[in-house]
Length: 133
Image (cartoon, rainbow, N blue to C red; front, side, top):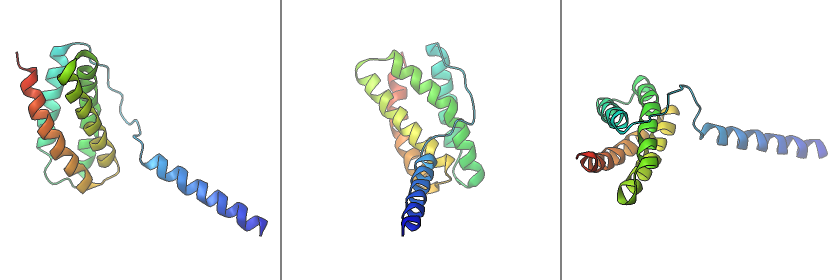
């Protein structure tokens, strides 16, 4: 009985740790921090445009989305750190969505990736108008 209990506990811990591990982003690509608003806007516009071309969201495209989000995360992080008020609030919401897209695409979850991209594109469109001088 004692061995069964220990085996059950070990099994539970293994499943729990695997589930937690699977839901966290794994760093596959190192991207330099963005330090200017010009670069942040450029990367934001380019990566958002690249994401909009991903319409099938098959395994290859999900991998592409996953890789694109590394650069997009850096641009959005710049906006979070260098904005204030409503613009900062929007940047923080975008950062959350980009992370959700990142994790969903990394785990090949098409429907979740698609839903988060739709929300991201809506917010990014509004944010883009805030960036214009």
